[in-house]
Image (cartoon, rainbow, N blue to C red; front, side, top):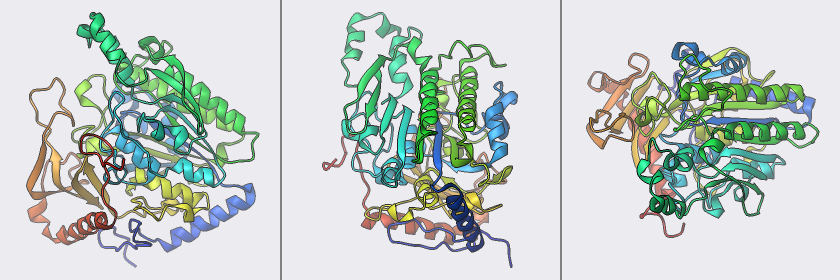
Length: 512
């Protein structure tokens, strides 16, 4: 029998409202047997810890070739990668809010409507969407969100109204709380009482908050620069207390822990200040993020919950290069804000001792939108995945649980706000549109400084031979056109029955 090939193999559609997926029969049988044995042994589905960092690059961790080599050792991330599955083709969306919404809903941005990050209290968010917290809550889970939210400040989009039992964190993004307070970046605001007051009257909450399910959020503390440097420590303590408390509960739980770091501007906790070999704020912050995941997993072990918990570690997008050197590292082309690999290929580590084999490394495609159907599959509740809307994620349970399991995903689709940018299948990536990355009028050139360019003819890159996407291979590889044309046609065709959605900006749908 020939070796499985994702380009030459057909995916199976299980519903008109679901993304087609590969069915690897042997892997699926192994996964079913392991899950059945686990449920018999433990009597309940696994806990879930999602550890999502901000603007951390594919190349930052030691296990991805970074670590000591780039001035910030990451022993905890490296240890966890060795204990589970390290993904080399894990995909987010180009920016943070679209990525977070995609992870929570299992849908690409052109469906959930968060095409870009909302700014300074701007309306628009998750209202009307179904989240993993809501679905797992219906399946009997206790659901906790901690840290950065940034998928809608409007009340209907806040975590306590979209499925989470409790939330402790801020609703926006780090720089909105700090940049206008820092005279290095905004002297014209800091030294102007009128402009400082103008900022304070903007419609965004300058505090981090606490909220219980169904109730209004209550302010905890205003996020000044000194407070901001302590947030990841405060949030770690809150999550640690949650894990300790849940050890005596009979219900499984979801902990969605989103760090403040390492989004610009980084003001490291004094415990980590100048402690990295690089002695730089971003690298110092990376040390803290590494320390925090170590503390969370140590708490899982100390409370006897480590073998009952699936851990997913990732970042919401690639480096924000316009703020370099306060920025991450990626070996790929361009950065956050783009659909070049540097913007959307992120670290992805999955650990579940006894269930996911240690020491695995795979280049199988894994999307953020796969999290929702995968968690519902692992929870034994696949029937709860919504059928009244299109779900772009595929259930990757067998990929995770089978020894050397294969990805169930055929295509990754690249969306650049409302523009369909391209798709990947196997080692090949086709781009129809992209962000230019050769601007000369910016301090740092990244995904936010270019222009949207529609290529006259598609570009085709072999990501194995050319991971930096510098050699368009199309005219020598025309045989692959059919596979990509079918993928594009089928994906874009789903929007006829399930129309695109906009919840932000002047073109937002009136119904939202």
